[in-house]
Length: 218
Image (cartoon, rainbow, N blue to C red; front, side, top):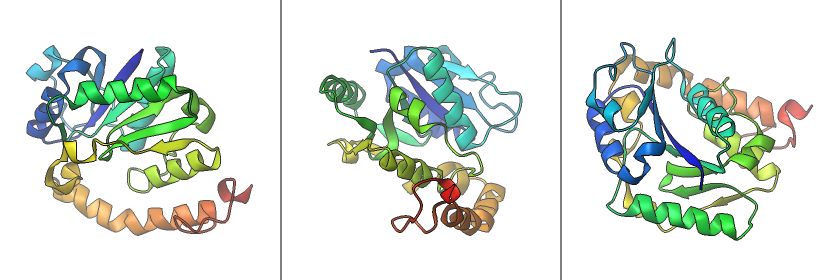
């Protein structure tokens, strides 16, 4: 199976190291986007294990995900795997998750995403994403997954849970990049409700109570 693994990085290289070390079977397929302010990974030995991409300017989460979608399409990938930089897979999970993906793919199901511990490690169907489109970059991070999932649901793509939910650690309860940076945390707190409001305007209601079948009912 042709695939890439995408990890957006902002800070906490210690957690990134643990994430990468836990997916050794994926190393030859893995790309990290260094979105840190001063390119933390420029001289880091992690680049000897996986590919590191340094964008001209730091990307937001949604911009990073769109980068991976485009790269997967350009590389003729069937799937691509998204991993949080503060996630850590238990031993053997990387291999087992890939086998599960292959099994589901071979069953011919119309699926969009396959989860472990939600999307801390998740596989996306590239053919589905060609129809769904890219992530909405109006969202920086929060609410972008809810928006994408709703679009996926509207087009009839399965979102599949697996038995690996308790086998992927999400350090610090998740959002380590935000929790480790006071400025980033303040920005998130100031804008969270604004993005929630944008979602409601876009879909005619909050998550689970959407009224529109198309963005902005157009």
